Image (cartoon, rainbow, N blue to C red; front, side, top):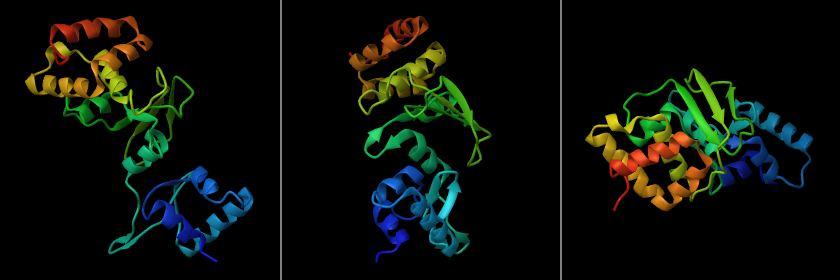
Length: 209
């Protein structure tokens, strides 16, 4: 009989975060109680480790001890991706840094995700972040609209008239990826100030002609 940890390794790989719901889905013919028993047994033998509540991984032995997944990998798995689907994005001040219109690296993490049902909620921080805030999206996030939503979040919170040429170039690149049509379609879910910011983007020729 194939070992529990070997089955997880074949499906998810080593040192990758695995959500408890993924483990349960991997063994549809086994009761939840039996799955937790197998998880505990695998943890006792060291083939499986717990990162946080509901998050596990298969550690790799290194020269400095057992490996641990990066915090960004865990955040991506929990809130940004579900298989091949995009379900969230980094937002807030982190978004400005990610896009390239700011070089400040915040010590807090803000995520907008389909997994969040409340408008805004803080969760237990991990991975060196002092605070983690989850937000419900203004409309469901998909692969097709995620860059448009990121663009709209960014211009809503930023004053683009103060951007230098490099920051403006980064904003234009995001607008190109998102697509003008998709941006304007998604903008109907945003407040009136976002419409004013879009008009400002037009004045600064943010959208490709």
